[in-house]
Length: 321
Ligand SMILES: C[S@@+](CC[C@H](N)C(=O)[O-])C[C@H]1O[C@@H](n2cnc3c(N)ncnc32)[C@H](O)[C@@H]1O
Image 1 (tube, rainbow, N blue to C red):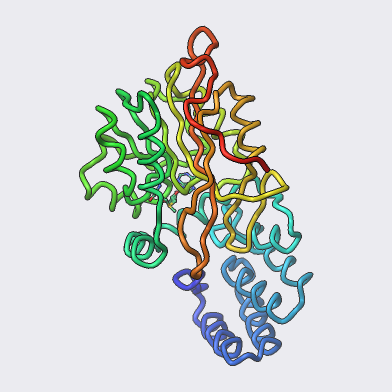
Image 2: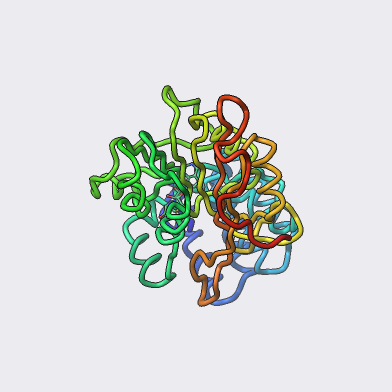
């Protein structure tokens, strides 16, 4: 993850860091820590170096030292492109971050973009497009003048949405992912933005979709509130989350978040949505194991405050936590 950025700019420090990498690779973590510490004495503002030192310390069993080192990485680089804050959260077994640092997500997907589709479709058996297509097929009126693909990535959901709208916008944090989406020629507009920090749109959307994106956000209050404010009356929101039982939000070992069924449905109801469906799905595989998720379909409030179907579910709400 740090790979590309793992250079401090100081020749001597970089040599030491490379030697530390070799020592760590050979399993001599105490020596790796010493040598990298020496490099950091030369360049104490080197965020990536502090992050890597935290990794060595964690592997060596010094969790306190690791947390201190990751804290220093954040201090040196407050936009936290390495996800040091998440590593501290994982150690505490409690997500204190309410989201992933945007710089971390951006770097992750900028690096991933060229092999994203091959990896997802060929190796991870990604089901996102089919799950969204199935959800739309169950909505009585899925078409909209304007649709928005939140966290559109390389545009895998574009072919599913295109027949349902006249104008399709995609938003993503990663320029490299957006470039891939652009090459598909399916989107009328592609914007580089953090979906957690967008202003309200000039014109509302009739359909908002987020496939495999909210698992990069912890607390969903802000984005669900934004969707409620950005949909036309009666407009549709369709999204997936990774699924957890118990806690509202869990930061998983994968460094993605998972959300509980009750958290999601309570949140949508509070934001004035009618729940039309919340289905168990398998999103993809991770190291050969099914990643379980939920596909959620909700309808925004109409002008009168009632829902088009008077709040009655158009298809089944499955299961309970
Ligand atoms: C696993 S990909 C899914 C892409 C696409 N929705 C699909 O189903 O193929 C997750 C995407 O969400 C984007 N993303 C994650 N957090 C984001 C945020 N806060 N703002 C904008 N995009 C975000 C990432 O850059 C990445 O392209």
